[in-house]
Length: 422
Image (cartoon, rainbow, N blue to C red; front, side, top):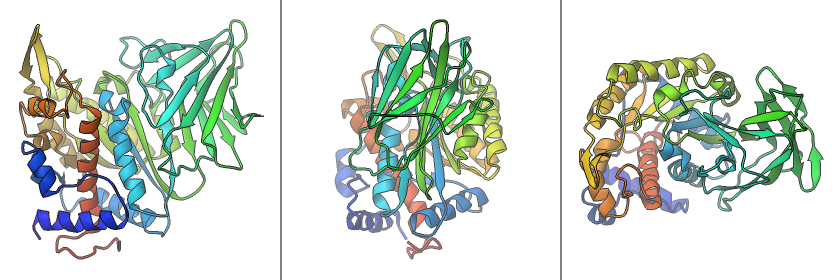
């Protein structure tokens, strides 16, 4: 079955469920002729047990059967911005009716100075708190999976979170505040609908403060009651429920490379134990390959260390590697050159997929290869820095990723409904 016919079937399926995502159509191909739509596929060994098992589990969770699926998307600024991850999340949750969703791991980025926040949840604060990120040479705080933290000192601080996505029905009935107090026994509490809630469970070893609610929470305030000479470091907030369903947590820190998620995040594994991911979508690499020199051996070794950490939590976790996008490196004032290190990184991603029974989504190839970011910028899909994308660009990428994802879930190679019975 040719790809265009298969995509047309998928388009009809999406129309049937009312999905507004862009998929590959002749109009889209005509609008962006520089994009390699034929490359919009997941590349993996068709005998891959882990990938197939993941899609089978996803099929069960979204087809009214049983079980939950937890997905983690981890990367740098592409992920912290939130647009790409949320587009994928929205496409999944609006495509399969009746599934229960939780928002998963979040971080109140904008509580720190000059730190951007995803648009799908609003953050308000009492003050700007001291920021620590894993991109610092020597972070002063112990970080976890989020790779970022804010610290409150000397007064009662509060952070208000409001889910800002009316089109998605997230069910949050359990909130886990991640963090620790270095000085004094500070325990955060939550205000919901004017009522104070104290933790129903505290685990100082895993640094978790768990709150349970009888009704769905869409807006809440975390209060950090520090007294003089006390402090509390917040490292993440996990929004969950106790039902089967689908969750996609996005973890991103501006400027982060693979090394920044290793020794600088000692509580990464403990935080992963809270999520127990079935699939990790990797998007780390643009910062590793940003300089003139790029050590692919170190890059490969760092990735394997991160993967080994994830396997300690779930040995059967599946992996999808998103290759580095085409980008440019500034050489002088108003002078840029296409960063050919993306080709070297791409080779490593394919090698990693082979070694881990994983899959590759070849963003570099889909964009059009070396130098293609200029065309994306001219089409207002890429930003002037020739590294990042505009909101329209990120949304298009989210739709293309979902299209490739959907191809693997719904239809077999002969065009018939496959073993997942959608």
